[in-house]
Image (cartoon, rainbow over all chains, first blue to last red; front, side, top):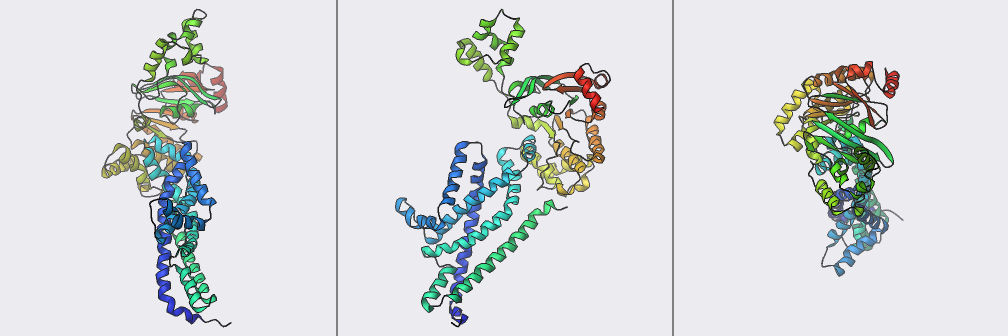
Length: 221
Length: 297
């Protein structure tokens, strides 16, 4: 079979729009996930058993249920039992964010635990209250140490967003499927999509490394 | 200034402090010395409540900073049925000590008068840890500077956040103190670029930026390379001359002797000797202190 990449050309505007959707879902999910992960990780390191258990249960649910099932649940299932209604973008973003929060909070917990007791003691000895201590002393250091795993989470999030094509949102993958059904050609569109994701992931990795270098400037000798 | 009464500290089944009573006057400089594991650091860390006492009370500037300890109030013990049951078997003080030591008071076996007295004592106010720590500074063995903040930010963060002073004033205070410890030229750098001695000098300045009434030093030179010990000791020595109250845990015997008003020798969780440096180092009374000094001097 002869390959003909020119069949992609008419679809380029669709790819452009779809790319924006993919990037939007990824970034919104990551930011929301990051915000959610902070209280979640604080619960996990808390001395209060019920908080700890609740946070651990939350994580186990998002780890234990396949992502596609979670997406379907949020989009099709939840609106039938709760008075809420999501469009595909909202449902997808929410699921991805809650998922990321589960994973990020695990590494954040590790990051917080890895911080020397002396940092807490110095903060306490200076009379600093718990919320300020966590916000200004402990979490900035913890986030710095979880940055590499944060970049990994960002990357897997980006790749996982392909699942929203299954609830009808037109992301890059969906455009590929549209091309396939119109032209009966599969290699060219999916090859182009693979390249898209590969380039995006490489960009993210580079961005992550730059960021890491930047925040590590306080460690430089 | 600081009054420690009947202080006990257990870590699980490990009894680290076994009845410490110590008075420290305003402006006094006290060195706590003793073998490792004797409870020196635990005692020091109890003063700013980094360790919570198991029993006993600590008073700072006339204010109770620990929960009131009913066992320290003989009138409570005397009101108990346990006391009445055992009275006559021993003299009063010994009996109270025994009841306390063996923890013989159990509320459910006691009468109404005992309970109401106990309730009154337990209900007494004591100061919150945050208030206490504003007035008591601490310098740590491992400096504990905040690595993600510059020297300046390390210095101004707590004064701004805790004391509520303005940024300009805090920075001015920081510059003055950094000048005092000879670190002004490092004001903009991150701690990781400093040597151990420099870090400790900044840490001392950071503590002083809170304008504490008392400064606790927890083995301030133990983590330093030998050539850096002197620069830190010089800073502490200069500070000692300002009349601030200082409590030091140190292994630097020469320094302790030179700078202290009193030496407290701790062994196995009890104060074995409490004397002025000249007396302690030349004619220690106890065998344990003698044995210790033979090893370290």
